[in-house]
Each structure stands twice: as structure tokens, then as C-alpha cells.
Image 1: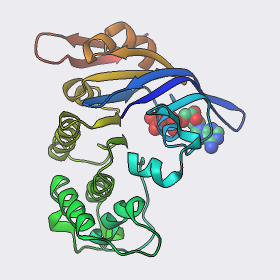
Image 2: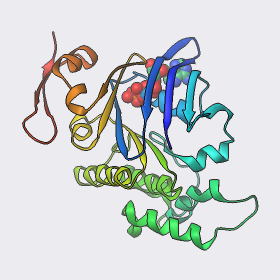
Image 3: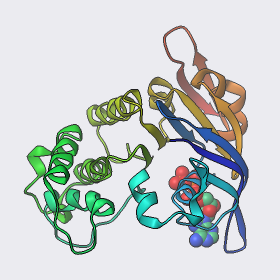
Image 4: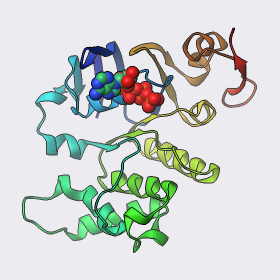
Length: 256
Ligand SMILES: Nc1ncnc2c1ncn2[C@@H]1O[C@H](COP(=O)(O)OP(=O)(O)OP(=O)(O)O)[C@@H](O)[C@H]1O
């Protein structure tokens, strides 16, 4: 499975939120999409799920996403949306079960294979202790892990996670990044929208840096997270050390 973006544009209202974005995503790779607030990261992720109309082309294995039947796209690309609110007081287990919906024929019940996938997702996202809780009563971090479990339950060859670390404590941030990395190591195509550059540098194989709706850098963390890029895109002065296995970034302050 491959995802390829060619000259993608997205307009919301009168605003050109994504402009001429081109990038390719391959199996076995954890790619971080980074960039400042409002850069267009979530919009680009949503375009890859055909949730907003786009110009240019977004190809999933040579098929344009806009023409792909919704259920097929949902089976091929799992999606963890940003900051989702829950409206129904379902148990955690029932909520995670919803991840199997793209696999179910109309009016059919979940199969043993679906149950096994749900159990794998519960284990991988470390939410077994929450399975009988009512999802609307969870803390922000607990909810984030449960929603990740729902996305994992799809067992799609690709996963797009929009800010999967939001509201997580440091330990669970590491757990989630290790989980995303292991999905990629197992052959998955994994894309994560991230704000934490240290986590992005440490765990991602590749980073795509977005600014004002445009891809401004695309490469290894060391290639992308340069002091010059951090200054021009985020407006910060930062020290980048390349001595270890991944670049470490110390933010020194706003650039003047
Ligand atoms: N429905 C909409 N109509 C008009 N503009 C919108 C709409 N939705 C989002 N935008 C604008 O599009 C731009 C990109 O938004 P997007 O959510 O993709 O950014 P982002 O990079 O994910 O930001 P953040 O890091 O803050 O989550 C922002 O300026 C936002 O205000």
C-alpha cells in the first residue's frame, strides 16, 4: 500500500488552506507531519481520508481517494481524528468494536475474527483496565488511548493519527510513539501529525514539515529539523544536537 499526494490543494471557505502539496508515503515507515498551528496538517490528513474535497491528486495504490468507495477507504486507511468528542455513553469495549464497522456486511454481527482484532487492539493500546468503563466518563488521556484502540481495531494497512499524543502523560506518550513505530516496523504505513518535535525526531523515520499549507521540507528528522527551518517556520531559536541516534532540540526562545 502506498499513498501519493501530487500538487494537492484544499480550500475551506475562501481560504487556500493547503497549496501544491506533494509527498509520498510508503509501507514500513512512520512519517511525522509537523508544522505550526494552522499550517494545514489536519486538513491535509482529512484530505487523505477524502473528508474534504481537494484539487490535484491523492492516490491510494493508484486509486484516487475521492473515487474510492467509503467503506473500502475506511478498511485501507484507519484514522484517529484530532480531539474527538464522544456523544454516546458506550462502554469502551463497544466503542472499540466500532473500529470493525468497515469490515461488516450490512445487518451482520461481529465474527470471531472481529473479536480477535478488538482484543489485539485493546492489548496494544493498553486499555484492558478501561474496557467496562463508559467512554464519555474517561479522562482526556484515557479517551485518547481508547480512540487509538478503535483505530487499531480496523487493522488497516495504513494509519493516520492526528495528534495522537495530545493529553497524554509522558509515559503514555512514549507508549503511543513506540506503538506507532512498531506498527510501521510490522509493515504498516503510519502517519502521525505531531507537535512535539523531540518525540517526532526520536521516533519518526521521516518528517514532512508544513507551513502555510505548503510542504517546506521532507526528509529524515536531522534533515528537516534544522535551526534554519525551525526559525523560518516556527519563529524560534533552537539548538539542534546531532550527536545521538536522533536530533535533540532545545528551544532557546522566540527569534527576533
Ligand atoms: N471550515 C473552515 N473554514 C475556513 N478555514 C478553516 C476551516 N477549518 C480550518 N480552517 C483553517 O485552515 C487552516 C488550517 O487548519 P488545520 O486544522 O488544518 O491546521 P493544523 O496545522 O492542523 O493546526 P493545529 O496545529 O492548530 O491543529 C487554519 O488557518 C484554520 O483556521
